[in-house]
Length: 80
Image 1 (tube, helix red, strand yellow):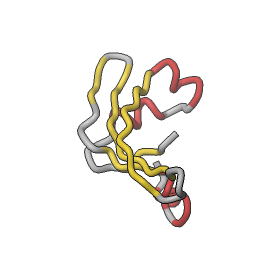
Image 2: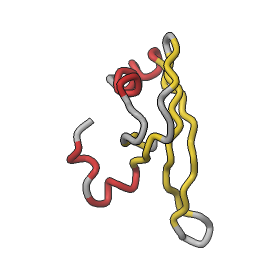
Image 3: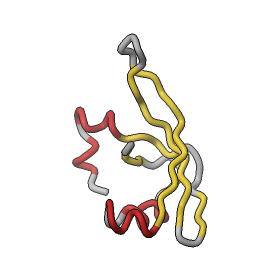
């Protein structure tokens, strides 16, 4: 993933991986912290559990499955 995408305002749509990815055959489970706005407009954090499958990522976002397998604890992950 290119670091030029993380600078400035784009940084808000990226989260940090909270624990090591759980790698299974054909899918990877990621826990990451992402930011959202609440009802009052304040930025709050939330922990998201995301499942990246080999089949679905090949159609929607090529390369995401392999990136999730190589991801490490503390790394950046897009909040999509």
